[in-house]
Image (cartoon, rainbow, N blue to C red; front, side, top):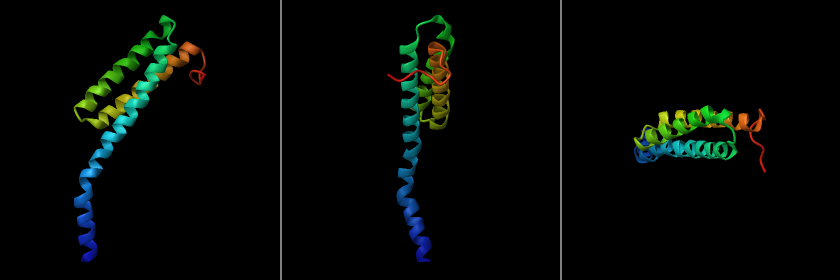
Length: 103
């Protein structure tokens, strides 16, 4: 009985802190996507990548909107898509399938 009471107490005390994990992961993915979009923006020199770059920007903007409405799961998925589109834009700009070269 004591064993069950301990786990119940632990769950009751720690449950509010576990809810913050989604917000933290959402922030991490948003920051990574933001960095990828910034790299793609800096590397963009031709209009050939404008579609990919625009898609990355739009997914990032929607991701921030979902994050602000506390829809963290959708925010993470949209941030991942923004990062993927930003990578595509960077790859087309540099002509390197592995992505932009680091200085």
